[in-house]
Image (cartoon, rainbow, N blue to C red; front, side):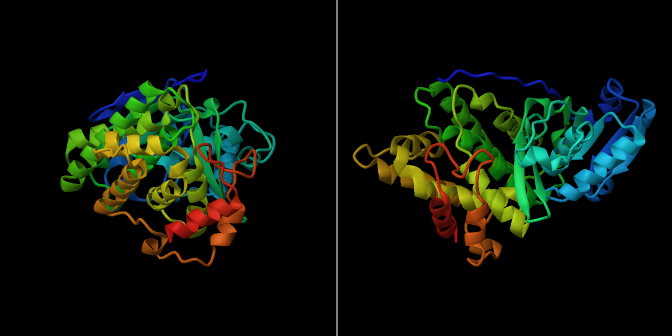
Length: 389
């Protein structure tokens, strides 16, 4: 197990009706806030009214900025930065899912910074301070409600890039699983794939002797899988929704990262797909992850066979670990298909015409290669895109 630092500073307020407590928590930080959200769903479901009522009851003045899109855009982030500066806002409330939260985090670090906020995402600067961000979560998926991550898409060149700094972890996250009851099945499935990807990016690690973290990853994956089937059968199964929502936070608050190196190639490869085609991130991951596994599994066959056995109950053939590893990859594909996700680029109406462009763009901020289990260069990434077709 490697040395590590671990910080999880976000206060979690979890359970039924907790959105009605938002004003009480916001007032500890500011009396004038930016209320940041996406489309019209929070108004259709009544969540917008409940949040506004709680804020008004606690004397909070609200400036609104809506219209956050999936794969949130830099243009709206810059608009939010200007709005906060102009209105003297010192706190941001993000009501929505990962896209809204990531956008709020970007606005938060951009307000006190004298340069362009894209500097952080381009690796030219590091954020040292931020406006605090609070969250009312509406979808279990990205884990951004307690993570140090934010991913933004720059419309100039359609570059999708992320940052990872503890300073951007939200101050609090209000999490009521009931708020996810009305999600369409496809959005629920995309969220589940995103959660599982965050766990698997950490699980497929080159770090040896990490049994405790392996077991935690495996248990969380199995819980997500079991409850995914339950929630697809009954969208208002509170227990299943609650367990998936809690797993989403654990998957990406870095608890499962402690003592190990994560891989993260699949995320980098997928970012280029969703940046260009505006595909939901979870759907893109359901396509990329199996293709990545097929390309790299021979680098550590025993780990993939372990994954197959402990997560998917594959009986290990010790005389042919490759067959066992391959069976685990197939079961992952079957699961994604079962819950209604694409497992090939063609299933998402994406053809081969821009694979070269995506391979050119795909890289980590600190270098040209991606991944840790296997270092992937441009040629490798292109082959994974082709496997995903």
